[in-house]
Each structure stands twice: as C-alpha cells, then as structure tokens.
Image (tube, one colour):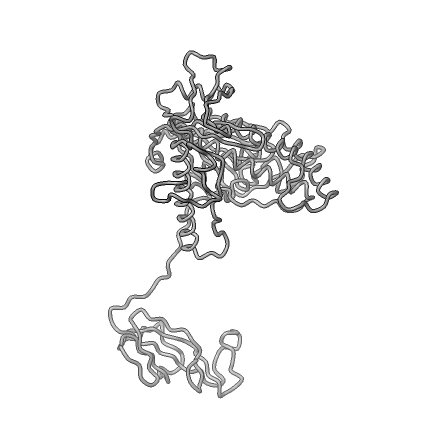
Amino acid sequence: MASREHPTPHPDWNFSARFRDFPWEYRRAVIKDCIGKTRAYLTATATWQASGKKRGKPGIPAPRNHPTLYKGTCSLTLAGVDLRASFVRLRVYTGRDWQWVNYPTRYNRYFEQRRTEAAWQALSPKLVLTKRGAAIHFPQTKTIEAKKVVERKRDPDLVTVAVDLNVKNLAVITVRQHDRIIESHFLTDHGLDQHRYRHMKRVAKKQWQSGKAVAGEGSNQQIWRHVRRMNEDAAHQVSHQIAQVCVRYPGCILLFERLRKIKPKGGSRSRRMNRRQANQLRGKINQYAKDKAYQHGIVTVEVNPWGTSQHCSRCGARGERFSLLAGKRVKWKGGKLFWCPICHYCANADHNGSANVHHSFFAEFCWQPKHKHKPAFVRLHRPARLEAEWEKGGEGNPDDPPQARSADAHTRKVVGLVLVQRGHVPAHMLSRTRASSDTVLECGGNAGTGGRIQGGTNAGCLGLFRKSGYS
C-alpha cells in the first residue's frame, strides 16, 4: 500500500490503486495477522532447529480469508430484535466504493447463553470464508480459577471421573470417590461405526475403479463431508454428556488415557479407513471434553494407559478378555467381557478399563512407580589389596564345570579374587592353595608400575589373566 515512507509500492500488489479508500480497520487487521503468522513461523522454526530433527520443518505461512472485524467494519444489533430474523451489517467493497450491506444470520442458543452471562467477555469477531459459504465467529473469553492437581490429590473426598474411549462404546464413564465406583455411564455410538464403514466401502470401491486421484483434486467429496459431519456431531454430543457428569461433582478431576499414535493394522482398505476415522473421533471427544469441562473449572489429566484393559480393577491381577459366541466362551484380545482368574471377577471389558484409569491416576496395584536399584559400592576407609592366584596344572574340581582341570599347562586363569585390607586376611577367605600370589593389584595409590594396578578405594577389577600378560 502507498504510504509516506513508500509512495510507490510494487505494481502487482498496489492495494491503494485496486481498492481505493481502503478502511484503516481492515489495514490494521491485515498487519496484525501478518505479524502474528511471522512470529509463529519463527518460533516454530527455532524449535525445530533446536530439536535436531530432519523431518517436520515448518512451512511458510500462507494467507487465509479470516480477517478480524474491528469496530467500524461490522455491526450486529441484538437487543430488542428477534434473534431468528436478525441481520449483521458488514462494510464491503462493491468494485467502486465501500458500502454497508446487511446479511441475515442464524439463531444460535449457545451464543445467546454466553452473551447473557457476565463472566464471558466478547472479543472482535472474525469473518470465515469457505467454499460453500461464510460465517462470523464471535470469540469469547472467560477467566477460570482451578486448583492444581497436586493439591487436589491431598483431599480425602476427591472425586475422579474416568473416561475410557472405544469404538462401539464411544465413552464409558466411571465416577470414583472413597475408593469405590459410585456412578457409571455407557455412551454408545448408536450404529455410527457400522454406518461409517458402509461409506468407507463405497469410497474404497470408487477409488479402486477410478485409480489414483489427480494431484490437487479430491474424490468423493460429498461422502467425506457427510462422514466429517457425523464425527463432529458425535464428538460434540459425547463431550457434552461427559461435561454434564463432571458438573455434578464440583472440584473433580477428569481422567483420560494418554493415547497418541494408534495405527490401524490388518483388514481391508475400507476397514483401515474406518479405524482411522474412529481414532480421529476419539481425539475430538478428548479435545472437546477438555474444553467443555474447563469452562466449569474442572481440570483434565491424561494417565498412563499401560495395562488398563488387561488387568483386573479389583485385585490388579492380569486377566483375560473373551466373548460369548453361540453360548461358547471364546477368548481373544478384543473380547467384550473381562474375567480375572485370581478373584473370579467378571465384568464388561470397557467398564473394567475405565475403572483401571483411576488406579493408574492414583498409582495403585501394578501402576505403582518402580524405583531402579542403584549398584552398591564398597567404601573402604583404608587402602585395600586385590590378590590373584594362578591355577596350576592338574588343580581344580573335575565335578565342577567352572573348576575343570586345565588341558594346557601353559594357559593360566584366575581362580579367585580376594579383596582384603592390607595386613589382614580373614580365615574364611583363605584359599586351599598356597597364599603366595604372582600378581598383586594395589588399590589406593596414585600411580601404577609393573604388575601393580592402582585405583581409588571403590575400584572394582574384572578381567582374564594369562601367563603372557594381562587382557
């Protein structure tokens, strides 16, 4: 744009010539958007360079049709007007000049609910342009006060709400207080997985018939839009029910399994595509439930998912999963039921996994932290001496393989290393051979000469000695 410092901009990007009387509000929105994208790109690039990875290089930011509508470019009057027939006024460019144009809006009960609450603060709206239409987003902020998880764990009356995400049962919710489950909920998919699988079969068949798609062109766009809308609707409904359960227990903690990379394996192409969509749906439920619960001051924690579907939620023993097919018990890893061979506890496998999420959060049963044992060192207050004796030909116990007789009289091996203090040899450490030694290893000095090896008071010696030298 032409300015006082740059009166002649590039002719291909001269906004002053193409859009005369360009409003300063739009100019301000474009400048802030460019600054934000540049800072984000530089930060992401610096993080990628510091990681030392070859893959994952951030791409150059591209322009998006999401301008921020500051005061003077947008007007929406809601007081005293029927919300179902309201209009929004936007300042647009008609090709000659900038004019105010009215556009009809749709009623949204969530927007009206937040607008009436005093805790929510409205920000500048954004105009989002898509291929099929346009929408105005009204961002709103709210200050949330929540205690830290470490402080909440000390509360003996703490309530935890665990959610186990699956395919058929989209979410199994269990509420625990005072070491027992007080409430459970099963949220099924109502046939969503099977319905989505039929669409994936159609997509796979059409892709097989048409071959490889042309670069830049999408295939089966209507089916994919339908699948995305189904997943989005199911994610919002399930996350809303999870948040409603959390609202009934103020100050509770919402628990999810920390699932990151789940790759579909085996099966046909349509089944792999369906499993991929199911995994994306679980990620959306997790994200939306976090946002909806945090609005009420409820913090979400992701726990270690190891063994939650394989161990018993009552005794912690490893159990087995099975299903009943034609009245027979068939054991397999994807069974719908769980049975413990130790305490004989039998329950729904998803419910058992949801109950184990609580145990993983409180580090109970097999989820207790395992401390690594550090190797013990011998600390001596005085210098010590390591004595190595040579085995003579014909010595050793023939019944003991480590003490077998030597076949070669010229080869010698160490039969014992004795760590004693200088000037003292315990009676139980005396060898049945002569006490004289051919090699002495001194510990405690600062230099080594000849056949002596010097080291600290905590030094340890391990090796194989031969007649020709040391190795």
